[in-house]
Length: 251
Length: 298
Image (cartoon, rainbow over all chains, first blue to last red; front, side):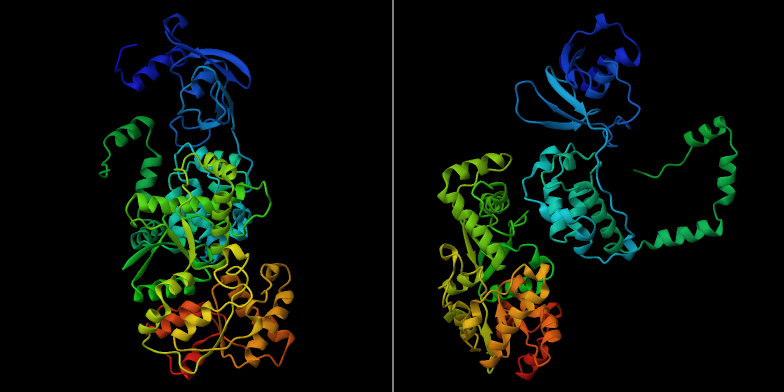
């Protein structure tokens, strides 16, 4: 492998065996990983997700965007000879020699049902739906488990202070993979609490956007009905052309 | 202006905001800036007495590390005191600090468990705001008084967390006077009574509010018999039990006359001439405004 080669190119090259069916003899570097206790020899540059597929696993659940955004492919692993239990997203973590791993495709977690418009905007909303929040001992295990490098404990503590802005800011990049909740010794479901906090903050601490009100009225009055109807009846080619020629708002 | 790290705790950010704001603004009058500890977490609420229960000492010690960080990044200069207002937080933080200092093995284990943080060096000193005022000097407090609390008869109430156990107590556990000294410097008439350190019922208030309301009745009526118009405290839990539980007291004792319960800092703010702007009296259950208006303090 050439020095300084872009990492994405390396991963793409290593993934060829899966994506295009390149012969195994073209793969130069190999590692052995242990999936649920069984050893597999896999190309060294693969992610855990592609390595598992290489080994023969087929994902019909526990796998989503493959871009590190959806939070579906949570993995727990230990490196050979280390005591620490690591966590990560299988699509974002490269295999390492001697890695023991297992997928956590789903986190059993109580998810409260509530109507935010009927809740009072204060700390009690957290204890009403997630009373176990009070069990936090500030051990920081959740932060260590977070594949997004969020300060999870800080946002749990923000909830304990009734700090809706804090919980929103600190949890904004949460992908709801559930690894924090799986590791928490106090059995708190951090990511659901954060979602409640963000919803309450959005509902009560931000002014109602006037332009949205206006646009909703326009939609209801049927301002865009004709255009929508036209789009719905386009064929694939016409639709592609329209998409390619669309006017884009600046990013 | 002296800059000091300050630990609020959860209650001072919610139901006891009136305690926090009056303390911060009153401290400024005394040239003390209380700077909120960045990234503070729960104090641990109750100091765990179980000998091998180290996990519950992580929360308080992590807060002490934040004091080191404040020194490290220059928010404060060589200031290792951590000021607390809530008696509960004071007690838990101070006892955890003492515990690790006295038990090197526990100290090491707790530092090991928090391996992502810098090690706690054991140099932080947890103090209560009342101690800070005493050290600043009640004479200095007196100098800053613009509206003496004349004719205001106040019975200070201490509860347990400021006084016990002895090794963390800020005053004589049997006959504390620190609040009385402060109130005198503010110009108030202090009503001393033996119920000033009788238990308020603490967390029994969750389990059975009438257990607490009977204690509240005893504590308040004794103070009233001695002539007190109001009570002061430094503990949000005591404040809840003495103030909010007057509703239940009234249910059981029709003859009972309700009496305002202040955080001592609210009276500091009034005496310093800050008015009620920084007192948030709306958070006091029994409205103290009529009393203050009657005494021409508002």
